[in-house]
Image (cartoon, rainbow, N blue to C red):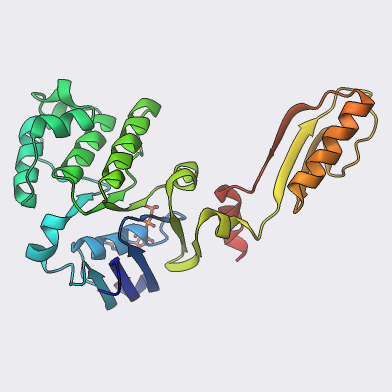
Length: 292
Ligand SMILES: Nc1ncnc2c1ncn2[C@@H]1O[C@H](COP(=O)(O)OP(=O)(O)OP(=O)(O)O)[C@@H](O)[C@H]1O
């Protein structure tokens, strides 16, 4: 293992027949990092994660987890918790039995009731899996992944289908894992969640890694946005970019332009309606992908 790298992916290719789902993918994840692998639908994220999880063999390239092959399940499994996009949990087991069984298979030690509490499933302990709602099943998948506080947790779209309370609870549990030193790798289509939490982000599109870095690094090449509307009959503002009466301005000098706008509004006694100003969001990085 190089330095404190928990995951090392070098020139990974995954092909299905003659279709290259993952093409020459290289990235690494440092110990204690939260790394978000983001991308468009079908970009190859799950295929890459499946190799990291040891569920799929690479067509070519090298993947190392804790310095060893992820196919070496005996070495890797006790140290890695996995939340798949679709779980293979038995429908007839109760929630408590499922967590206990998958937990025991992981080789890690934990208290089932503690894990259920962390995952918001205490009241469902005796319910069979077949009777869980979609969101509850996701919480159960999460519970089995974090059983025993693994050093590495891989989460494939963990918050898809969860209501806002469940999402907040899941992120609080992830924060606790990080406080305890766990490394987290995840995929999500909720870009704002990655923007708030990821130390680094890799952006995939059509099988390849298009960009990688911190949120600041990914967004710094794009302008910031100021948007607002004016009451009818207002004088012309000192800023261009009006569209249907609403103003939407792209700027590389957010602070300077905002100062000029507010100063103008103050002196002209104009109310800036629905005023919003902020750096470019990851959404815009994604929208730029199709043109990359
Ligand atoms: N078993 C398979 N056989 C053939 N093609 C597959 C298989 N699994 C995935 N693919 C294809 O490989 C591509 C990458 O799929 P993958 O699930 O890795 O993407 P993803 O980035 O996770 O997408 P999403 O965000 O939509 O979940 C897609 O075009 C998909 O149709």
